[in-house]
Length: 71
Image (cartoon, rainbow, N blue to C red; front, side):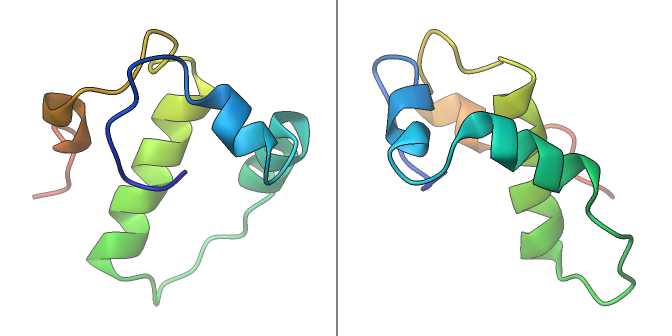
């Protein structure tokens, strides 16, 4: 999902590129990798939030900040 602000559910934009069922399957089978960057981790957390339905009412600017960021 491109980082951006969505006034509505971003699912149709994602579905335009890849079926969310396929995206979920790929996420669920993603192997652990020790050489991921901080950006990779942030992207995966955002993807997880998307897949869990956290963005069903849109994505606001404050949601782009990552409160679950590893310290």
